[in-house]
Image 1: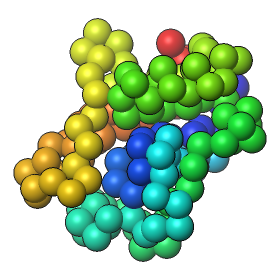
Image 2: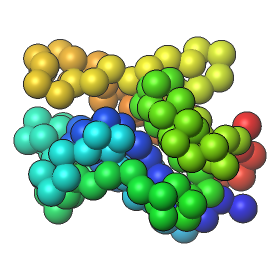
Image 3: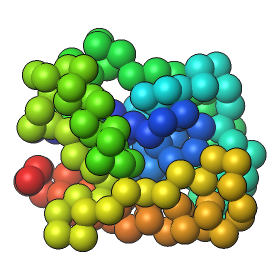
Length: 148
C-alpha cells in the first residue's frame, strides 16, 4: 500500500512543489512531500508558479525547497520525477529505489515535464498543463493502489 510519496524535480521551486500540492489536495490519505535533485535549498517557490497554483486553488506560499536525501528515498513508497534523467539519477544513487521510481507522465506517452525555471510564461503554462495531466493519471492509479 502506498502511504508516502516523494515528488522530485531539479530545483524544488517549480514543478515538484506544484505536483505535490495537487496530489495532496486530491488524495488526503496519502503523505506527499517534494524535493529536488539539485534543490535551491531554503528558497521559496517561484513567484509565477505560486500564482499559477493559487489560480488552481493550491497554496505554495509556505513551500521551502529541499533536497532529495537517503532518508527521504528510503521513506517513500513511491517516487515521482519530472524527467527520465531525474529518475535515472535517483535509481543510480539509491539502487534499492528501482521499481518505485516513475516519471509523473509515465507509460506509453512517457514524456518529461518541461522545466519552466527562468523561462517565459508560456513555458510555465506548458509545464502546469503537463503536471495536471500527470497528476490526474497518478490520482487514478493511487486511488486504486495499482502502481505499474
